Length: 411
Ligand SMILES: Cc1cc2nc3c(=O)[nH]c(=O)nc-3n(C[C@H](O)[C@H](O)[C@H](O)COP(=O)(O)OP(=O)(O)OC[C@H]3O[C@@H](n4cnc5c(N)ncnc54)[C@H](O)[C@@H]3O)c2cc1C
Image (cartoon, rainbow, N blue to C red):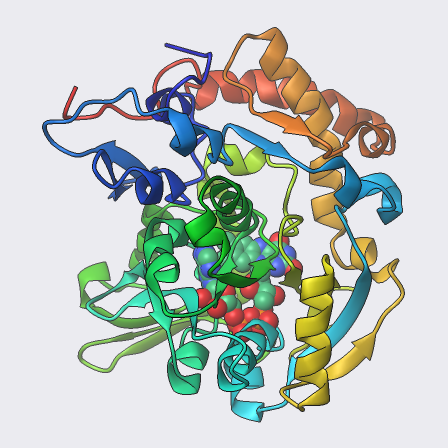
């Protein structure tokens, strides 16, 4: 196996693809995103054209590399361990229906909708459940309040919004791009290489992300509830309360639900490998990034979202939305960010040991610059330090990281 990561195929083979789809956007003649069963959404060569895609598609690939500009991190708090941060807010959508439907406080939906209704953007690029196959996701450039807020809610399954950055590029004005940290890093990297896109990306909103489980993870959950996945008409992972439950409805009107803790506990075991060696779980490359203020107890409370202001463009968008009454809330001390996400902090610390082990074992390793991990590793307990090495050695074997992630039919 080629561990030099010198083509999109090599990144995929090395289990490092995030599934964002940016390579397929930059090379639509060569690649198409496909949901590979039990794996995730992956760029597959279009029949007749084989492999070897590199150039801009490879340079923009967040699976292969992530890098902060030095100036973005110059005054970053926490030694840059949570990325660039100008301010931290806790907010919620003013529209009570959006707040209720949203994963946490409906803030991503409210901010995206406000950008469009205020005329700052013409649309919002968003992921949502496919109407005809609700276990799968699709990407749309939503242009109305109703359509934007109908995409509220987290999809804990593969989603590849960057494949449709063409919709942003060809729109008549700027758009909001919503995505996971890898999607946003890819959008930014693509925009740096393609001015036509840069001109049209008006605002990026990243959601915090602990990792993407495969579609098979969701299908197993559905079967576990005694339902055939092909019978599902609607499926939500969260929302309608904070954090809300995993809920489904079948075509014949049967309903089932599972607590957030149980569903995530099961899905988390089906996360793709690249997510386990990701330093960016909080949308460090976005203008604004949004997650759960888990420092609070959620039971019985209306949803709230934690909003990290990462750029001046993000700050201006948030302050406009607050002034216009689209969202409510206020600033928080920065310490509430690590206090809200202790497990993401531990994961980032473990990363130092995991990456070192991969390098020593000569297994495909992404290149990260300006995403420090060592100080967080030092804060880990002895057994956590040890398992950052030993666990990685075990995973190299169990996950078969020396073999291609899956076999392509075209080969
Ligand atoms: C796989 C995954 C893992 C997550 N892990 C964490 C975590 O560890 N900690 C944490 O605090 N938060 C996590 N979140 C984020 C959290 O679930 C909420 O999305 C976030 O708090 C924003 O809530 P909101 O109510 O403001 O957003 P909403 O108003 O509900 O809007 C959510 C937006 O996210 C978009 N979206 C949903 N799923 C996806 C997806 N898979 N890919 C791209 N875009 C998507 C939707 O299109 C929508 O625009 C995760 C989300 C996902 C999808």
